[in-house]
Image (tube, rainbow, N blue to C red):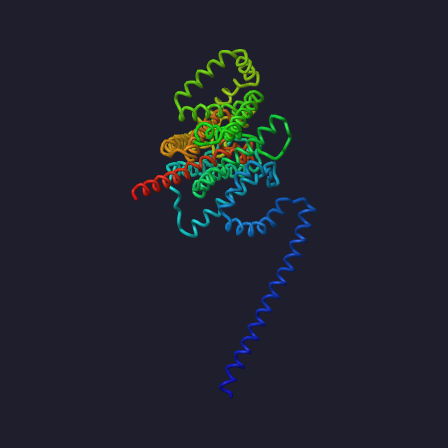
Length: 481
């Protein structure tokens, strides 16, 4: 009997002890939760009463970040799909306790890039989808980081830094905006490798771009859509590429696309004529797309444009006069000042947003930014950064042209035409404004929400290469059977 019941009695005692320990642990956790809720309630009352937004963000931010991290990790690819909508149509900004706010699109992009990098570290797998634009983009990010340290180390000692409170924070925020812009392109290129994703991006810009066009024409104050930067370019050029290059498109769709293009050009050219960076990049992209599609139609378009300029000479003279009255010739003086600063800091520049203190110290009565992304780049990142950017511009343009030539007839070829012609137009826009990389003292980092438009399409250079090569391999395998 003892041999039978002895172990049984011992087992029951062990089970009782285990149950007690479980209840004790649960009681401990419950008490921690209760006291935690009480503590957070008191903290919430304090920060709300004292209007301390930064303290509130420090306390409650991590609590919201932890569940958000696991949610985004679980639906990672789907969250990338939210990025274009967040940039175009979600006008939410996260307060920082200063004048600058963080756009929700930047916060989401930072989170996605951070999770992606963390997963690569855990898996010890740093491979990216092969593309010739990977290297120049990554090198540009490295140069931007080096220029921050370089600009601080070689900063002129007589600069009036007292005029710039928390200037290092401004520079860090600018650096993050630049690096995350590249990160968005890499996210698109590495995770949008199906045709449906490319169609989704086109659909976002065609749909919301149509709404922006309608709202602007009828002067509807919406306060929702971000119709700034190169929104017109990335609305018109997908529509134009579909119109001239996509085979088998129904005539009803062609009429709608033509109507969208005409309405947008009417708004951006005739109504907002003086905003050159709003329509010149679009016109350049249309000419480029036409040239790649048919050099004969390109010649027709050039002749038609020359006739239009000749017939409407008075109109164009008035446009030039209005530009001069608006101070267009003053940009030459701004560029001269910029080059003077670059002359003393030519290797790695003054760092992200770094030339602003030089302007305020040496040229306080003419401290205006360049409104030229190319000069911004050479002033912030020096000759090295400028050369790396030009390397990236050339490689990406060449890659887009190669993809257009290699792609079989169909949507992928139309997408390649959109990207290469639109990207050339975007690079042209850099002469007229800072719509590719947001400059901290023009748009602040909130400009990321519309400068990121171009980076979505740059990322397609990576994914289109993968899809075109896969399509060709499938066709070759089918022909060998």
